[in-house]
Length: 263
Image (cartoon, rainbow, N blue to C red; front, side):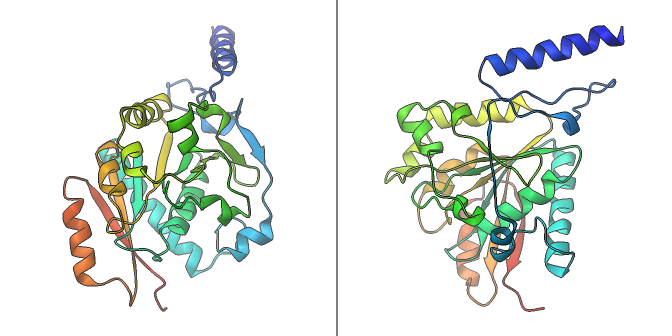
């Protein structure tokens, strides 16, 4: 009986690969996703430089420190809330620019990807200024905007940083002037729905533009389960934070991150 289950599982994954999709996680005897044995069929693996990751303050490969401990604590708090509410889609944004929301999104994604029970899809949804890939020392490439405007297949756009297991990136792609309209389009809504339902054990993190700088975050917020707000110590004004929270009033705000704080 066990051999039959294994044969069926193998056939299912091969079928997904032929269809150009990333195979979903195999299941254990209780039907739970086993993310330890995922193979990323059509997803391109790219090499990243450990020295660049460290220079850009990405926690992968860094020695334990209060900096890395803070992200591990954030991961634990986020996952607890997500398990309690059966959520799997998170937006990371900030009231204004320069608060460090992209680095926060990346480090949170890396920390969650270290958990044996999860995989992570990190999406650069800052379509006016896509620059998430630069944090990995990589040039910008085709991404979400090319899917939305030119129908480039999504499986051709995802990349896997070779040094970070269980993490897949969807770059932003070329810049779009009418990004809010694209992020709120039916095509984007369908993509999020597909992402949300395809992989039970996957956390999807969208790095969004600042709330007060454009309509993008507000336009996209109905598609996510919760939002994380990043604020910069000594820079973010109280009234800006209050305004951002007001604009996202219909979204579950899972918490705030005080960034660039003195020890």
